[in-house]
Image 1 (cartoon, rainbow, N blue to C red):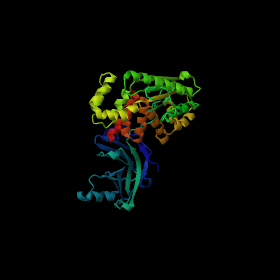
Image 2: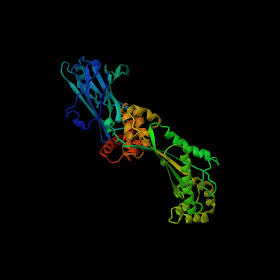
Image 3: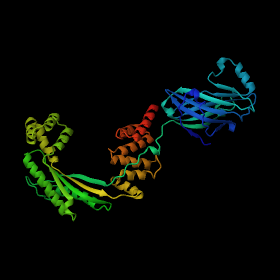
Image 4: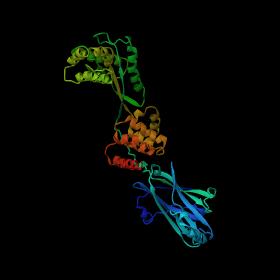
Length: 445
């Protein structure tokens, strides 16, 4: 038997059957003689309202017969609702004569009048619990009226899912990227002869460091889908020594590295550019902050001051001699580095091409291309969700990427991740619409 899948409606319990209920496909009880339809459920404050209609028109009962229908809500927990007792004429007489203590005061009792149209309207309100946002409504049928569990059937009549749904139309298609500009970046730590600027390829670890640069260039150069637009070198010197000399060394060494790398390729030399930062104080502050030096806050205060660079270094050396020795050995050497950036443009991809690129080099796709790939999968499927997970990982600050990621989070029931992504989804009407769903789901928790 196919079960009905219905969603909650909002109306006072007393009006559940007076607002023009839309009949659903009837579910059958008592061997097909009783039909159940119009199943409704809704959260009303801190209570859950449940209602349905039973049609008894086809039910024929013997005078001594009794049938007990007990609705049961079953989810991660369960609760039995008040029973509905249908009786033949003689059985009804006996039931009325019973002492009150033997009766079920919560039961809805009806005497069946064969060959007449009769309906039972069931409505009950119970304390709301979290598991009730999604449950199955079943009816236990005691066809002999004797309470014998062996004689009872348990018939599902509806799947109740009150969780607000994120459907496909909640997702937003990103705008097309006019030109897909991407970059591969890294850091190289070249060694130089003291106070000199020429490149010695086999000096210390230089061969390994130079290989890092050329490998990145080769990776991009050999990709048929891209075109290199710039290969930039950014040289940094450490704060020890005079600022004037550091400025000269940083500039000359960056220029020398740019010239050396350019000589290894037949690419247009204009693609190779360089710049220099005399002393990497920003890098210094990050490394001090991450260190375990006991006086790091005092050192950071000096580094953030308005003193001239040489005066900062001198003050740290005088006031914090022990830490300065550590800085000389472990921090300053890591501030002498050459950053390299290979910038390139990527051609547009068809949907089928984009599917393959997504597996190998997803960074080459635009958000729109990824969105179009997702449309080829079933909403909510692992493949569908993965596309949007990749999109927000590659574009962590993009509002549309965060909005769509929040949608997949809500489909998966991950409210923590959804809240994080919604915080970066902007204030568009589409984002507010998803936030409304998020709030509704939170209320059900």
